[in-house]
Structure formats: C-alpha cells, structure tokens
Figure 1 (tube, rainbow, N blue to C red):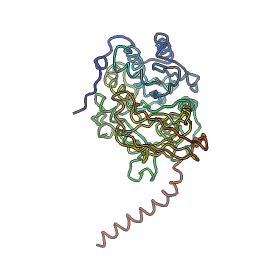
Figure 2: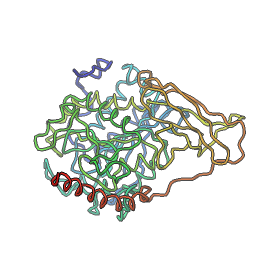
Figure 3: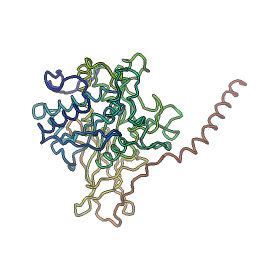
Figure 4: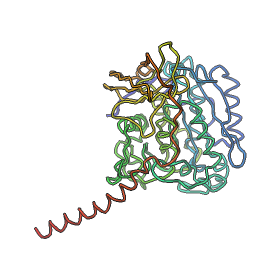
Length: 441
C-alpha cells in the first residue's frame, strides 16, 4: 500500500479555473509569467537568466516570501523542464504548478508553509528553440529535441568521469552560471518518453561501481529516497511498468547509469559542481502527447511535485562563524562517510546545507590550515516541519582564512581511469581462470 501524505484538500482536487490546459508557445509563456508576477509581486520575481541560440529569453519565475534575493537559512530549490524541446509535458506542468502555488498561498497550509520556508525557482523551458521547432506531435522523436545548433543540452555539461569535448551552448552556459550564482540545494529536471525517476550517477567508472552496472554516489541512500518520494506520490509511476515499450523499473525509480550510460548530463553536474542534488523525472510515455491529456498529467503529478519540493528540508543546515559571529565562506562541511570528490563548502554567508536522511551523523567543518571541528548530530525528519536541523559551527581561532578553492570542471574521477584500464584485464583473466578451473574440475 502506498503511504498517504498529509496533503490538503486543495491539492487533491482538480483545478476548476485559471490557466488553461493547452500548449503555451514562447510568447504565451512569457505573457503568463509576466501576468503572474504583476498580480503577485510580493511573492514572485521574474528574470531571464540568459538567451537561447535564437535569442529567446530563458525565463525563471522565483516564488517565496523573499523572492528577489537569497535569505540566510532559506534553502533554494529549482525545477527545470523542456530541456529537450520535444518533451513537452513538464513545460506545461510547471506553468500549472506556478498557478497552483500563487493561487493557494495564504489559503492552503502546505503551500503557505512552502512559500514561507523555501525559495522556489521554476524554469518552464530550457530549450524554447527546440519547442518551437517541434511541429509534429510525436511520441518518440523529433528534431526539436536539440537546440537550434543541433546540440543535445543533456549531453552538453562538463562530465566528472570523461572529458566531454563539446562546445558549451548558450542555454547550457546560462544554467551553469545560474547554478554557480545561487545556493541550490535540491532540483529536478523534467523530461518525457518514459515514466520513472532517475538519479545520479548517469556516467561512471569502476570507482563508482560501473563494473556492476550501477554507478553509486556517496549519497545513494538520499537519492533513492528522493526518487521514491516522487514516484510514490505520483498516480502511477510507483508501479514501474506503465510504458509498455520500456524496461520495468521497481518502485518507479532507477539509477541513471543502470538504465543507460550518459555523458555530460545536467544532474551529475549539479551534484558535483553545484552542491545540489538533482534527479531526472520522466513524466510521460509519449514525449509530446495531445493537449487533451494535459489535465490528466497535472492531476497525476501535482501531489508529487509539491512533496518533492518539501525534501529540500532534509538534513542539516547552518553557518560557520568566527568567534565574533562573522560568517566564514569556503569552509568544507561534510558528513563523515559522505565526503564528496569536490568538497561541499560554505557560501559567501558562511552557510552550508547537507541533505541527509534521519539518523546520527558526524559532521566535520574544516578550514585548511586552521583545523577542524567535529560534531555528532541526531538528524530528524526535516520535511515534516519544513525545516532542516539547524546547527552553527563556531571557530574560536582562525590562523588562515579559507580560500576559494573551486573544483576545476574536469573529470575528477580521471585518476581511476588508469585503475580501470588495469583492473579490467585482471578481472577478465580471473574470470577465464575460474571457467578453466571449473571445467577441469
């Protein structure tokens, strides 16, 4: 039996009035976003983070009690859709999510607490050129998948395992800049063509278990929880077999690499270089279904979309301060056993956010040259109260200020490539010897 969330009646009922269920082209999308901002200026901010190859704005609507800028202690969340221009359901779902949030603020307790506690960024279309180029509604494939330069944007990011020798596209660079300029904690990337929640890593090597057909991050338990949160709150994703032409996905989730290997993907980039946990949501068996089905897709997804945002409050958050109470940026803060290959560091406000499941953890705050502080914390289930556990580290003495030591955007796992090359023949030899031993025995 699926667990029933404590969602309000407004979340469970279909929308009676408001935004129509149809496909909105670029001009209509822009008009809608501007009208929302005009009607709800106190809880929204609207900006373009860049332009597509053809010069179309990449619009982002921000929702929150303090939408125009980051507020200390308020985590940043984002949804991105329509990265592949011909995968269209997510684009419309995010427009309806915006409509739902602004309409129900101050009347629905869940929506109100989300807006009070979270800064929510929504990008309905990362690839508006591809969407406009998709003239035929096809369930499987069209040229609109790519941007105007014919590039697949979900193969266009720096890769942590292999050198990704591609030209970074304007849409990709805009998103990279956006990720680097915000303190994103949690994200999801909405796609189509299957019905499954996919999680990091998409690429891999023996260091992450690729020889076993699964590329595991240090935060695999959290990623599985995040994927299951969406699938179990979706009307049917949790069944795992809704698309007849796709594999069966137990619980409606999959490790990205276990499904198929992908180089230069956005969710791996977020996790390594953005300090942001992102999963990929495949939301429709058909990439570009008829508009008549959009209301059903909204009804199937709205509870999951809301419940997933709440997961930004998992784990621990806080600041690293000096003895005078001043924030210290660039301090490494990690949970023992969950260290990242590109260490997670505090932002300019000395803030850190670590997504952790409920349990006991040892946190380690380190300023190279000034020592470390260890703290054991019992982490509760933050989403229940719309807040992660808060804990501030205070360094009594600092001999050296933490320097900005951003990780280079190169294959950080490249040291394992030589190991991989050496290990594979050895494994093949051992396998051969095992077979020979069995035969002769």
